[in-house]
Image (cartoon, rainbow, N blue to C red; front, side, top):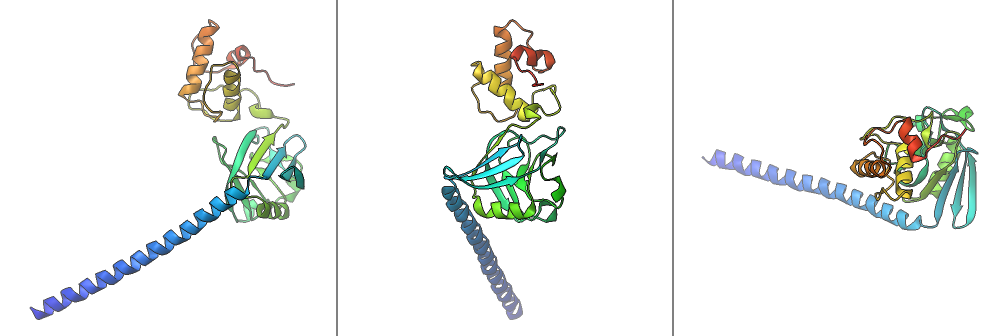
Length: 239
């Protein structure tokens, strides 16, 4: 009986020790996360005067602090099949990623895909339309910009030879996403039909706005946006 009591006591002590150890680990993880979170919040507050402007037409990235241009870099942009996103975004990720990204990654909050600013192992691509949509920089330039920007830094991506429609009009259906959806939403918002955010998702709100536009114009009520519907919306491709 005494032996059983002794074993029970030993197991209880071990369990208590492991519980304390596990609690300590959780506390350490929580502390590390809290420190990381606090640093992000601090960086976000420090980002208010920082601004990145990407001119896809000139394949150039400009970095501003207030009204002063601090840096200027030549970049690679997306191809016709994989155009770079156009719009105003924020840097929401920073990481020292592997060689394929040139050691630095600055992720953007593009609603319809994973896009960012990063370095490259193919410096010969800089100055050309060569990426899968990301803003590609020389690795040394990306490392330099990485030290300047903060979480929350505004990044405006503008222009380019392909625009939001890349290789041409895509037939859009509910559930689709992309820069072309943003343009449809923007068009419907300008006409007073769409009240939501320009999030690049062909959502229910976009569908309702399109249907209301169709009703007002006595057009057939269809949720597919094809070439005929683009024409009725007044959206045309630039030559």
